[in-house]
Length: 96
Length: 76
Image (cartoon, rainbow over all chains, first blue to last red; front, side, top):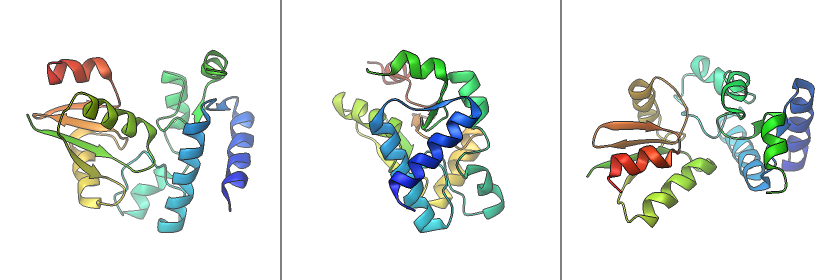
């Protein structure tokens, strides 16, 4: 899978859940690269902003979209890495 | 002052935090929690969570890139 394909999948997922991709293109591109780098290295698209223990069972929660993303979007308008943001965050920050 | 940053290479907020430290001429040790699994476990045990960046300043833990907390801890 390439960066464009993963971006489209992520965008479609975000829309289906009622949130958006971060309007900051730099963040989205960096995270997408990180996800693909982790997939290449570890076989899974682990969140690039989380610690990887090497325990596959524990690390399963890190696979994007990670275990915590919805709670984080609800509490701080974005997931930890910043790939997914609330509509409110998107509307406030788009074009900035 | 002992400053340790737990980070990962594709984390934008980690880059922002390191830039902040460098702009303020703060020396720090960096630990990559995606490469170093021992460090990953250490960080999780210290903070109770898996996210980066985490910065430890003389034993005080700050989770995330929080300028105000950093300024206070670094006495800036």
